[in-house]
Length: 57
Image (cartoon, rainbow, N blue to C red; front, top):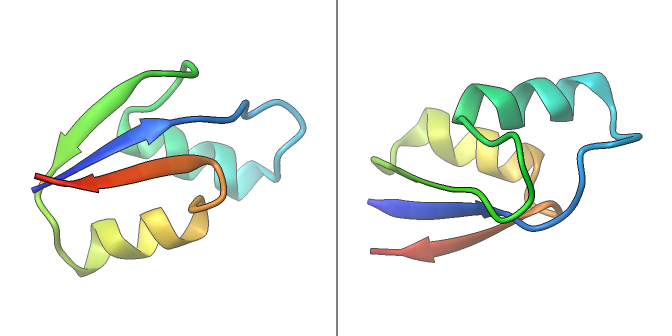
């Protein structure tokens, strides 16, 4: 399991980055979600890695 926290704003970001964050369930700064670590989630985190903080649980 990994905990993903949105750390930076989505305003002015590329549409694919905003859609990726929304698909993960992240809409507001400081919002966190816990997801099972797999290839799909890792790819999404890589796309928006500069906007989020990832912690192992």
